[in-house]
Length: 313
Length: 290
Image (cartoon, rainbow over all chains, first blue to last red):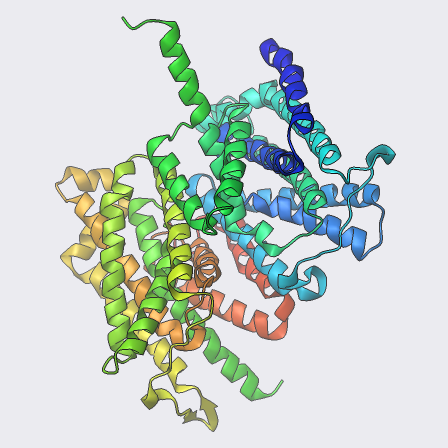
């Protein structure tokens, strides 16, 4: 644990240097990676630590983004109030979805989360009077936290980096706490945990809400970055990208989701400058990762490092 | 609201319910036997619609029924390949299998976009069925009546297959207790392929039969898959009767929701699902997961 607290400021400081050495294109790419990383970190709480594979996590990203867009443009609230209300709204939405989805576990959970997020996706498309349908909501602005402008690529990148570090630290604290250990217990041996007197359902529900909260934070940063929101942000592709980040990096590891989502974002941008078939590529990468590297990159490297350290007998 | 509205919307609900059954019955059987949520199923439906549309455009002698059967067979073959050569590799990892089916659905839907472009391709209603049918003084679109009939015919055929044949008995045994079934020497792995082909084939056929109403368009898979998921969650996994009843419940909820509250039709879909999940998490006809 202490080793992580030693490395966080060093790695964060290292990342903070990016705007000094790279152009705006790469700095913006960095911001997108940060957003994807927060999203994957929150999803990893469910997938990696809770053993609950969700295919509907984009719901929370989208709800927070739409709420923020609606509160700032239609209701005329300031950014501070709007952000607060959006996060509260998203967290309440997560609480409700959790109530429904956690009636099941395993594949039932996966199907229900997928169905719920698809319902929201359809709603974003069709409830034109509120969401502006397929045109999306444009003309949004970025906030000025503590009076500092985050309009430039570099300042937004640092803003996103600070939030990512906060997310990483708070999620790490969450999973290393006694509660986090009991969460892993429900993942590995839910019956035994129940027999030991733990309320398995409540542990999962609280985790679901916490994951929804951080999904909402990712949505806020996402809508600040793009200044635009469209129903595709709620789509199954969006959920699947997040899930791919988690699985590719290594679900149930602390840094895996960050590594994975950095790679996915990089691949998405790199590929889309050559071909416009991102969905197909995403499908192939998905199959490749699941079939060839089911554990993900971080556990893979760790295993490799372990093998190098102690020579074979 | 005039009487005509209620009657026509009810018929539309039945037609949508019939289509959903063609999609959801295969999904439910595959899930029941193989414990895989086959997320490619919506893509099978869409691919079927595109195959049918292309066949109808290219050859004069093909009518809708031939196209539907041909599409169904083609999808059964494709489904069989995917099951044998991709899903089989991940035998003991249901989550991995589901993610692979998700990846395949992305590939198929993007490939359809490349091949058939972004514009919807209409599938014409057969000439003989274009004139409306008059019943009790109301005019009904004939094709929708026939579609409901087709769905019921498929339902009966599947029911007979499952309940009255040796193959059906083996499938039911596999759904109930796979290990015991395998232990008494029933070739479960061959059953998996058969059921997967069957499910994919019925979905592909459904895509063509739904064509005159829905046409073939990019995003058809993403529109249909959640409906099928909700049907299966409602009806219970692995149950044909559940899929049948669930399809019509969702058909009615969605059609009347869209007609009466167009903005909120998708939210109204929530309601039957929430009620069922709250009181019977295993679905109307599902068995408790052991």
